[in-house]
Image (tube, rainbow over the protein chains, first blue to last red):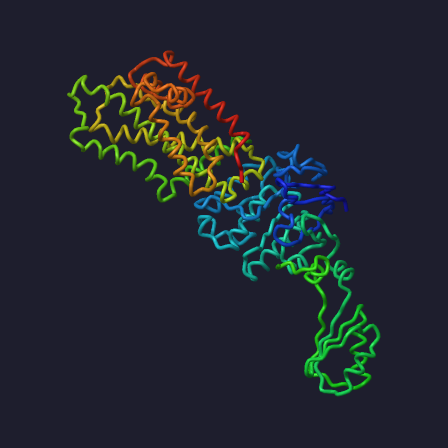
Length: 305
Length: 250
């Protein structure tokens, strides 16, 4: 599996403000790659440098073997782009937008009608852009990004501002794009989105990449802690929980215990302890860390702050 | 390939413009209504028999109205470009293989078509009140107006580069463009202006649009106005070169 995007040592400043610095990564053919970080971390700047819309001050970028700045028209013919916070003409009809976009590419376009059908916009084809819902607009943007049957699709903050139901529908669409063999490069500040959708993610903060890997490996590497929360009225329980190997802390609030430790075996050990000592529990939950925790650990603050 | 994109974009922009509640009405119908309204004012009414005494009105008025049409087209261009920049529409189009200049050319073409349409409508509607001599070469006059509008559009892009937000596009554009008519020679001869204004007038497209429009309207030959057309082309080239440096896409 080769890489379709190579970014190396990219730096971009706006006046005195350093937007991104020393950014390097590769995106593999056929994967969904996510650039995640809070607003203002440099996600959009990085993406727009790769799309050829901005010129980096330093560093090299190659997309499909092309220089995004020098070969921008050649590149734009082969990629699909969804921009953050970019609208369309208020009173353009859905089919007109698709028709216009189809006429802009040298490559043979995907059948617009089929695309609208796949994205559930067929009955909206005569609607004005301004009268579409947030989810419908985003689906139209995806349609425009796919109209030239691109090899790489760029999606910037695709589901921001959408309700959970539309969000899930969009995730399904993005997975569908990957299934058709395309490479997807997306940015998001939603950790759940990155976790569910991305094959690999790069965490970016203050314009620098902190770490890159699959969501699972990032969690394992940075947040090996596991927690079990259970409820019991057994008076001797706390003592026994503390004796479980690799348990670090046991905290109790009334009859509810939180057992924290490291490693995948923690849950098994807790269950064994419960059964060996015949401790009766009325509730049992495990809490696994996620990308949100990884981000907190790496940056010292929540992504929402 | 690029021509196909240009044509599609132009056509869509025309349709989108006509769907604006104020679009067609504001730029095409409204000037015509004003024109007709003026025609009902007895003092301004030019009867076909009024003879040579009204030659000022017969030449100056159509030229003035034409300039107003051109300015309203350019103002509309400035406003639309600002709205499109603010809404990220320009940026979205730039992310396609469309060349940046193709995007802007489409808007200029739309404005030229609307200018021609307004002029045609005015002539048709005004026939009753402002009978125009058979000598007026309409096709040539339309051409002259389109060349003038095209040249003024290039100033529109410079204005669009400096307006901070779409809300200010219309007023700022109006403040810059309307006074230009004052020194254009349509009211006072350019030669009789104070030196400073005279110097300003010399670099403005209106100063060349006015004699061109007046001349063509009075039946003069194009060959008598090569200098005016050349000056309008120069203004376009200079402003476009400047715009290419200062124009903001987002």
